[in-house]
Amino acid sequence: MHKKRLLGLLLVFILLMGLALSACSYISGATPTSTPASGRDPVLEQRIEAQLEQMDSEAVPIYRQATIAMDAGDYAQAKQLYQQVLEMAPDFATAYRRLGYLESNDSNIDRAIELMQKALALEQDGYNQSALAMVLLQRAGPYDYQEAFDLASQAVQLIPEDEQAVVAWLLSASAVTDIEVMRQADERLLQVAPDNPLGHYEAGLLAANDGKWEKAERELLLSKKLGFSSVAVQSTLDSGISKYALVIRLVRLGVFAMGLWFFGFVFLFLAGAMLSKATLKTVATSQYDLALKISPKERRLRSIYRAVITILSVYFYISIPFVIVLLLLVVAGAFYVFTILHTLPIYLALVLVFMLIGSLYAILRSIFTKSREAITGKELSRSDAPALWYLVEEVARKMEVEPVHAIQLMPDAMIGVTERGSIMKKMRGRSAANPFKLTKKESILKG
Image 1 (cartoon, rainbow, N blue to C red):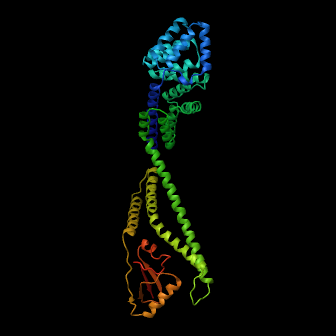
Image 2: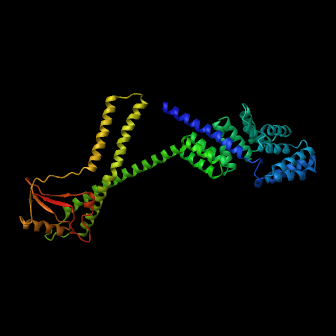
C-alpha cells in the first residue's frame, strides 16, 4: 500500500506539473486570432460581415482591413481599425472579441477580459464564450479556472467542431483537474485537429496518469515534433515518464529473451531425444559388416547429432545469464512477498540469501575453473602396443571419426573414450575436408 501511495503521488505530481506547463506554453504561444489566418472559415466570415453590414455597411471594408492586418501580424494597425469599427457599430460583438485577443497578446489581461465580457453580453455564442475562457485561464485568479471551465463547456456544446472552443475546454478541464472531462476534451481535440500539439501533449499526460508510460512518451515526443514547447515536454519526460518507459521496454525485452531461451532449450532437448532414439534404432537395425561401411543415412544422422550437441554446448554458456537472472528473480520475488505480507522470516530469508550466494558461486566457479581428470591408469605408448594402436586407428578411419591420441589401461573391465579440451577446441576438432586432422584436443581410449 505504501508503494501504491507513492506511485499515486508521483502521477499526481506529473499531471499537475504537466497541466501548468501545458497551459502556460500553449496560451503564451498562441496567436491572437481565433483561428489561423490560413484556416479562417469563409462561411463564418461572410456571416459576420453580413451582421456588420446590417449595422453599418461602411464599416465592413474597415473590418476586412482590420482582420487582414491581424492575420498578417500587424497588431497595432488591427487594433486601430477594430476600434474604428466599434465607433461605427458599437454593438458589433466580434470587434470586441478580436480587440480582446489583441489586448491579450499585449499582456493586458484585465482589459482583454473586459472586452470579451462586452462581446459575450452582446452575443451569447460559443466563440465569445471560448474566447473569454481563454483569457480567464491567462489571468488565473481564484475563481477564474472554474468560470473558464463553465464557459468552455457551454461553448463546446454550441460549436463542437471549433478547435479553439475544444482547446479552451481541454485547458480549463486541466486547470480544475477534472480527469474524465480532460479525456473527453482531448479525444475531441484530436478528432477536430489531429496535428494539434496540445492534444498530443495532454494525451501524454493522461497516458502517464494511467501508467501507460510508453504511450505517454510517444505522445509527448510527438507534441514536441508538432511544435509544442520543448522545455515543457522535456521537463515532463524528466519527471519520471522516460525512466518508466525505459523500464517497461527492458522488461518486455527480458521477458521475450527468457521466453526465447526457454523454447530454445525445449526444442534442443526434444531434438536430442529424437536423435538419440533414431541413433539407437539405427544401431539396432544395422547389419554387421566387416568393412564397417557407413550408410548415407547414418552419416547424415551423425552430422545432425554433432550439430545439435555443438549447439547445446554453446547453449550451456548462453543459459548462464538466464539462470542467474532467474535465481535473482526468485529471491527478489520471495522478499517482495514478505513485503506484501508485512513480515520477514529471518531464518528463511537467510537461507534464501545463502542459497543465492552459493548458487552464484557454483555457476561462476564452473565458468572460470578448469577441471582436469586424474590419469589413474597405465598409458600405453605406440611402441608398447603397436597392434592395438593400429587397430584403434583403423577403426577410427573406417568409422570416419578422429583417432585417439592416448591409450590407457584402467583397473576395470570397461572400455570407453574420453574427450578433453574446451568447447571451442571440440567444435574445431575435425573438418569435413580433412577428417584425420589432429588438434590440441585429447581423446583417450580407456579399457
